[in-house]
Image (tube, rainbow, N blue to C red; front, top):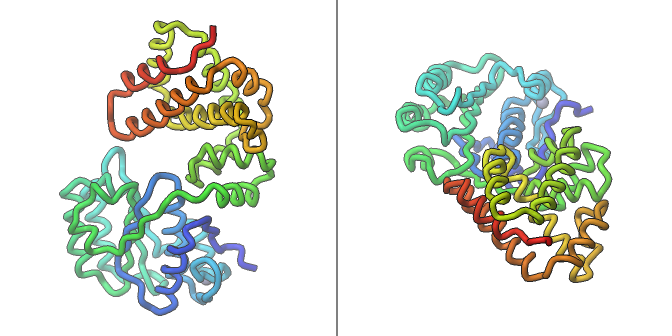
Length: 331
Ligand SMILES: [Zn+2]
C-alpha cells in the first residue's frame, strides 16, 4: 500500500534530479521552480516536501517518498507540521509574510529532518519582501528547505535566483496530458484529446476542465457564439469584442478557436482522422465548404498573434476588435 504517495505527472527530469539529490543527501537549501501556470509546479513542490520528510524513503519511482509512513500521510493530507505554505495575500506577497518565513526558518523542525517552506507566486513579492528573504537564503539553517514557486523567472531579483537551484519547468507534452486524464477520469479518448489540446500542456487546467460539469455546456455555447460571429456586421463584431475582452476565460476561448479552425482546415485537407472535435463533424464540414482556406489561415494567424499580445499587457479591447474584424465572413 502506498496510498499517500503523491502522484506527479510529467517533469521526469526534474523528478530524477530531486530524487537523486535526496538519495545522495545532497539537496540544496533553496529551490526555485519556475514555469507557466497550471503545469504542476506546486504539486511537484509538495511531493518534494513529502519525500524530504519521509521516515522511510525508498529510491524508487516518483521522488522516493514511501507513501506509507505517518509523515507521508500528513504530507498528502496537507497537514504536516513541518510543511509550511505561503501564498500572496491579495495581489502581493507581503513583507510580513516573508518575515514569518524568516522567523520560522530559524526554528528546528517539529518532528521531521527538515522544515520545508513552499512559497507560491513568488513573482508577486515586492523588492522589500524579496530582500527580506535574502539572508535566510544565504545562511539557511541546516534543517530548512525553501521552495520558491514562480510563473516566471525573468522578473525576479538576480540575488534571489543566484541563491536557489533553478528548475525551469515546461508544459507537458499533449500525449502525457491525455494519459493523465484517462488515468484520473473516465473520459473517452476523443474528449481527453480535446481537453489536453485545449489546456496546452497545462495539466492542472486539463484536470479542472475534466472535473467541471459545466465545462462542456459552456464550450458548446462559446462555439455557437463564435459561429454566430461569422454573420455579424463590423459594428456587431466590435460590440462582441467588448464582451469578450471582459471574459476571464479569454485565453481559453482563443485556444478553443484555434483548435476549431484547425479542425476546419483538416477537413479541407482531408485529414479527418486528426480532428479534435469529432462529435461536431457536421458543423465543421459545413464551414469547410463555406469558407475559403485563405480566410481560415489568416484568422488562425490572427488568433495566435492576439494570444501572444494578450500575454503582454496590450490594450485587450483593441486587440480583440482587430481580431474579430479578421474573422471569416459568412453571408
Ligand atoms: Zn514516507
